[in-house]
Amino acid sequence: MLSQGRAPDFDVIVIGAGFAGVYLLHRLRTDGYRVRVIEAGSNVGGVWYWNTYPGARCDVESLQYSYSFDENIDREWQWSERYATQPEIQSYIEFVAERFDLKRDILFNTRVESAAFDSAQNLWTLQTGNDQSDDSQSVTARWVVMATGALSSSKMPEIDGKDDFAGTTFHTGHWPREGVDLAGKTVAVIGTGSSGIQAIPEIAKQAAKLLVFQRTPHFSVPAQNGPIPQEWREQWDRDRQALRTEILSTRSGVLYDYGQTSALSVSDDERQREYEERWAKGGTNFLYAYNDILRDEDANSTAADFVRQKIREIVKDPVTADRLTPIGYPIGAKRICVDTDFYATFNRPNVTLVSVLETPIERINETGIKTSDRQYDVDVLIFATGYDALTGSLTRIDIRGSDGRSLKEAWSAGPYTNLGLMTANFPNMFIVTGPGSPSVLSNMVVSIEHDANWIGDTLNHLRQIGATRIEATEASQQAWMDHVRELAEATLYYKGNSWYLGANVPGKPRVFMPYLGGVDVYQAKCAEVARNGYPGFIID
Ligand code: N01
Image (tube, rainbow, N blue to C red; front, side, top):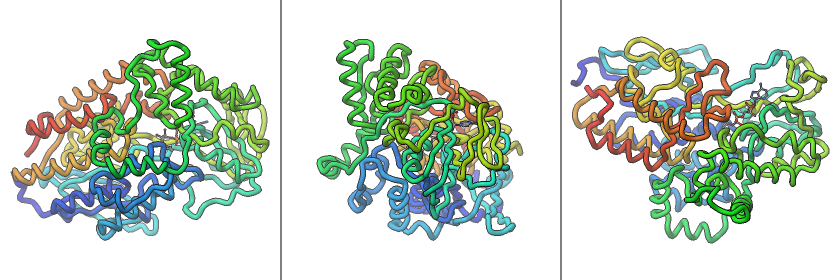
């Protein structure tokens, strides 16, 4: 039923102007909605706006990590490298925002602090603030879309004395936009996940001395980055439509070479050849060599051992090589990293690896880092310590649903969503690439476009039938998250202490958050739900 209350300021408020917010604005505005995007940064870009650390680049190939919704974008934009740098991706998102005249509907430098649902009127009231003043503004909308990103809530480590350090500190996810001059400095990096592994080789080239504090060694494969070969460009130009369609029929939303057999069904020689070829080609395609690498421990060991051997071949000092070698968890269970010269960087005379497992950090103090065996004095301290993934950017906003409870409270035992897109008792609030969707285990741009289109189609359906309210049922989200868990239990993902499981945030429930059924299957399920009149959702 149409509620008779006051008209909201906007039909839709989208929170975040990254890849998701930018496309949502275009799509929903084209469909005739009054849309406002609210963005904390001073420009579009989302994680690509904030992550300006040296070496930041995407580990999905640029031709595929790009919008598909308008083929003119592909015609007008030329990617220069196989894996695009952060500045190039940032320019691309800005190009798209300009191309579709989107910035006029984006409120920059503004942070959403709270959002509350008014059940009597079926609308959301958001309070916003900004870093420049204490002013808080109130704005209302019928629908809210959380385009807040899965890896945008940065996380500092639980180390005593962080505030005592007198030098300069940065988190990779909030790197100063004006850059940092590291020449002549002694620099410490804590963390060797994807961000650390990308930043370390670049920092090593700039700093006088680099100390890398590593807790868990991560598995990394080489990007083998370079200019995009001309024949790839020509193929993309020629077959773009077919390739985009093929992307949607894959598990990951990426055109990998998906091996169809077990790693254990081939001879040692054949397997070695296969891994060598994939290593030489570069990228996460390595993990798809066989269909059971993430399902069977013995199959997994063949891939893990291959990478371990490579580390020993590349790193000259055997003790450092040993410390860099991941053991005790399956390759892929923590997100695999993609690097350019990460392991070789430890052959440089100005780089030292400190194993925090052997000599734990006791505290940070005024001049640097004190481990169990010595003091390391440094000028600059860099935290490459990751994110409160998938839920952090949602629960840090005080979101109150129809029963007045906060989202943080509602998700205290782990996130619950139907299809990753909506959560019970938070009507009219959609989530893009949320927990319970393929999200971080897929090509994010592919999943973002899908979710935005599903949301747009749903709003059109509601408009058509005169409805002003939609929400997920408790039963549907319980069933969906059980399904998400069962899929993960059939794999090796529970055997790594990863952010997929919330393991990097003390007290966070150990719940595997992304959907593992595949982009192809997921998108078919979402389409089926819409086609069948939205079972699992209450529409009013
Ligand atoms: O974060 P992480 P990230 N003492 O959580 C360590 C995406 N991304 O920013 O593993 C010492 O992976 C922690 O150690 P441990 C991508 O999806 C993509 O690097 O918990 N160390 C770990 O080494 C990626 O997976 C791209 O034992 C501490 C590191 O900090 C995700 O973002 C680029 C510590 C955190 O690694 C997150 O990557 C960048 C402590 N107290 C990011 N606390 C590309 O597209 C934490 N650590 C390429």
